[in-house]
Image (tube, rainbow, N blue to C red; front, top):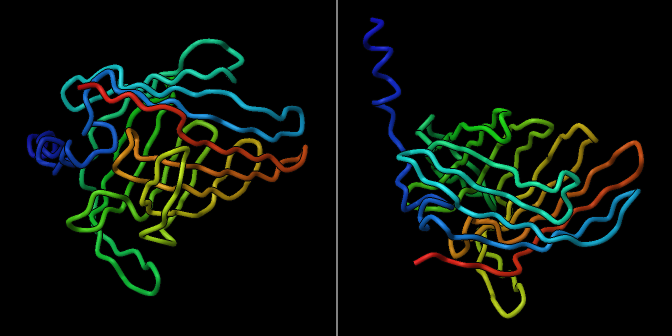
Length: 213
C-alpha cells in the first residue's frame, strides 16, 4: 500500500505545457504592466515586470519586479506544472460547461501558493479560478466568454472573470480579463478593496511584451 501511495504523484495527469499560460512560452519571455493605485495614502502609477526566468522540468519560476516595491528587490514565484485534481461544471450565461480542474502548488518568496483553474474540455482559457497565497485568497468565475478589450494599439478577445477576494487589508471584488495571446494570460485586472482606511483600487494593464524566440 505504501508503495502505491508513493506512486500516486507520478500517475497524476499533468496539464499540457502548450496549454499553460506561461509554459507555452520560452524562458526569457516577459510582460511589463502599468499598475495604477488609488489608496488612502498613495495615488499614482508604477511598472511591474513579470519574467519567465527559469524552467526546470515540471517546475518554473516567474521573477517579479516593481517600481512600487518598498523593498526594491525582485520577488520570485516558483510553481509546479498543474495536475488534474478533478472535474466540474461552471455555468456561464445560463449554460453549464464541463471542465477539467487543474491545480498548481508552489511558493512565493518561501510562502506556499495554490491555484486551481476550471478549463473547458477542449479549451485553454479558465472559466473559473481559485487561489490562495500569503495574505490573499480569491474565487472568480466567467461572466463573459468573449469580450473585446483594447489596450493601446492592440485588441484582445478575452474571457472576463469576476468574483471575491479577501486580503489582510480587507475584502473586495476582483475582475480579470484573460487571453492566450499574452504571457501569463492576464490582459487586465481590476481590484477594489474595502479597508479600515477607506476604499483601495488597483488596475493592471500590459505596457510591453517580449516573447523569446
